[in-house]
Image 1 (spheres, rainbow, N blue to C red):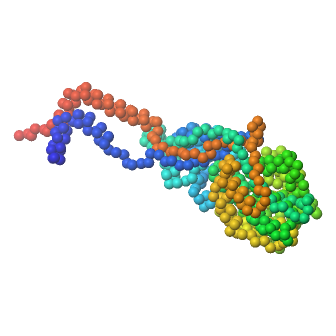
Image 2: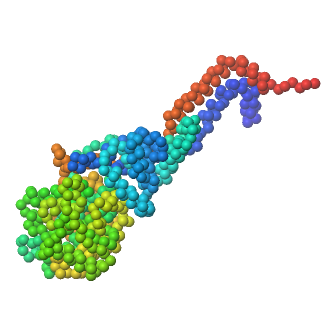
Length: 548
């Protein structure tokens, strides 16, 4: 059978070569299958912050993406999706993409950000506020690195880098034959979220011994912040502060259980929401307690307000105050007790008081205690950071390894000791390291950006449950933006699915059309001049007569 087929093809080639060329070559092109390849890759992307605060827009204002991928090395970035890796990211490259009106920017982050070199992490942390300082219409997304995405980046980088060093003809050929990637998001355009409620939680331990007892308020904001809400885990800022507050609530609830250790102080614990948005939860809570009610612990006799912020690392503690405490006041007593505990039990800790006046001209308050200071309540913030301007307070790089549980436990014991010395002369507290570690692990296992934590969130309900275990009269407080003149506006579409489709550039279609047209033209000429072509082929293929 194979021998007969071979004779048929042999006769076809010898007797009718043009017909064979016309039929056989297209059949080969159709039957030969290309090598198997992934036509597309689907991955999750996280959009940069988009919000309005006090009428000022921040972040990216766009969410739709449907454009071809390039790296920043390409000469032309206009209407292209610029892909960058964190290791190669710089503010100049980011600004280059924005100046050239790029269609979008996608920044690829490593899976294990804590394993990145510290200089790269620190550089990016310092750039996050600059990226958010002004609004941009260019969609900016972040994606977690995987093998497929890294392959897309490598191929795009090769294509983008080679174009600048080639001649015009080489660029045309390279452009026609190279693989490209079309980046497409599946979501819709972002829009403002209406009636978003920021939730805060309050609980108390009532003192005994009289009606007009002094009140000590312990405060920590639980929300996190970073350049992308879905990547903001806030381990040190302020998961450490929340963990310390819950542990202090547990310790003092035990002391307040027994009559002989039930102190003559009211202890009020407040977990505030919207802390990263100028402390909106604290602002509304103060308004509700001081302006809209006749009976409140904040109206009667507040000894001091202690705000806990970023306490999970370092060997220094700073007490930030708006007005230095006067001698003989409860806040002065706490300052002296903190100094005494550090000197006697924790000499490795460097403790200091940092005085900074409240600047009402600034759009954002520096620390949470300033909200209380504006309302004439004595308050201060305890933190291991010497300044509110340090980048780690608002970064997606603030992940779980940034909290050292041993140092957080030491700081918790120190604060508990000082508070107990103010309330009554007790010097032995049993801080549970496992409890602190478990709370930090839970807090950093999920993003807690204010845009993601609604009133039905498991974050709120779990914190409420923990407060309810130790405190009485646990309440929720809600903050909603005014509809006519909102202080804050949040937007949706913060997490989307992106597809990278393997495509050929438009010039490839043009080149393919030219080739097809040329082929059809050759076929047409061959048919029209078949007699001439046949005679030429016969003369070429006919064997020469042997000479006798």
